[in-house]
Length: 289
Length: 163
Image (cartoon, rainbow over all chains, first blue to last red; front, top):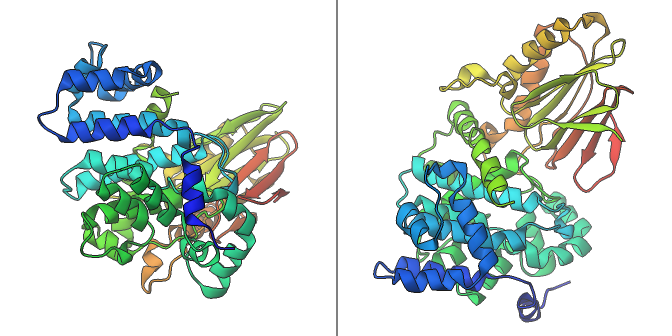
């Protein structure tokens, strides 16, 4: 079975989402001359969105003693970059926090998995000296967006995909692509383009399982490596993993690129430190429930 | 209706409360290790993340995080409430590995290293592993019903089976 990508992407519009707010806000926040009143107005047009955003801004992890009560206040105290990643958290929840049948993910599993990958990506960005850890957070959060669209087809062809993984000794994504014509990363990148995500996010989504395929013309190869490693550790730790489980490969070059020592001490120390972030992930989950 | 205790990464839980099921959910390379005393109907379960505490540069307070520290801690908890070492039933599940094509990538096989480390830690304490379900590339959930003493494992996408 080969997917009709145009048909598939046309269906995407039917999926409830308010990503357009996030994209608009993200683009405005990228502009240092942003009109904060205008920005507050756009965010404020959606009441429930505003309520959720402020709740998240007031969660324990940001540790403000005085409550943030307005969007203006949030911008001033959290800064543009953090606010941007929180905007994506709020809008993503609606799409990611549901059952994804084709990957055998119960409601909440892909959501926890995505938030975990976001927090791990931000951590890897920080320890590797990456310029924008908040961007890494958002890239990690959204990397599996293609799964939301492709999962019904994966369900139909699951046995064939897994058989190909075994018989040809290839990763799940590659087998997805061979059977369906496209894998969830490629479909995700197409959605990202359709929804006018920044190019850098489109590319991290596309190459998060295959950083070696990322061309030198890509906007930010380091970010692709960060999200690839964060995704792999999320899967390895079993956080909300589906039936593709750990059938993905981890590229050693990506680890090296982030300055991680490729020996048992280096790898185990990294995982140990990342596991310690799980309480932060629990807090995030609770803040937006 | 059974009472479920979910055991998160690095945690150890012990119970003899009737109707309670100890669950190590969503195990990837981690190990769910359970030790059961059938006389007391007492079970302890750990969700082990890594093999060896000595290798880690920054020590943490969670004994359950590492195989070498989890096993003695589990026994300490069991003996504190009168468990009989000779009666203990030990089973484990998990230890899956990332699918990997690259040469020299064994260093990334945390699942296998966890499995071997648990076995070593058990034999150091003179305990015999009765049964295990480890390896492969799929996530698992591991359970122990302390009332019935039934251990079970569910691979993602498959039916739950008794271990």
